[in-house]
Length: 178
Image (cartoon, rainbow, N blue to C red; front, side, top):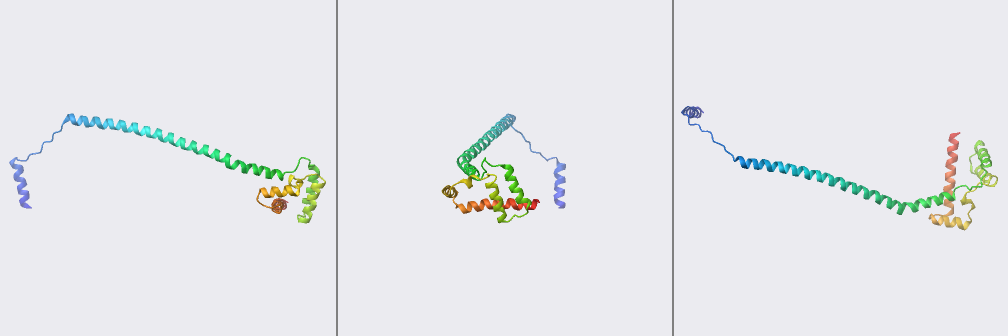
């Protein structure tokens, strides 16, 4: 280690230390600088064009999706909705119903506090016979009820049970409300 230090001191004192000289071609350096600036401008323009193209593509994809959604709804959901309308129309009370008399029948049923099936039948008969409130389903002939049940891939008893279950649930909610 002492030898290396001595050799270094000898070199420094001798004045023989030479630094390498570095030179560059100024014209080529300016050309590279211009190329980099031109590339940066082209790159920014390309990014901007890509962003615009991406927004257009995204807008087109969303528009295609929404159009397809409407077409599918019209093609597949509209017939189902029309079937629901027909089904509910069959369970809708006709226009000849005397609402005041029907209200008295139902009030007697509710205020009597008897929500069993025997009293329900009495109330239902009162509403149908005295008030004239029948559903389109009630007025259908047996063969028409069969064709309606067939249309919904069920039978008449299932239709009656579904309607009875709906009415029973309404009665139970009325019990809770009292």
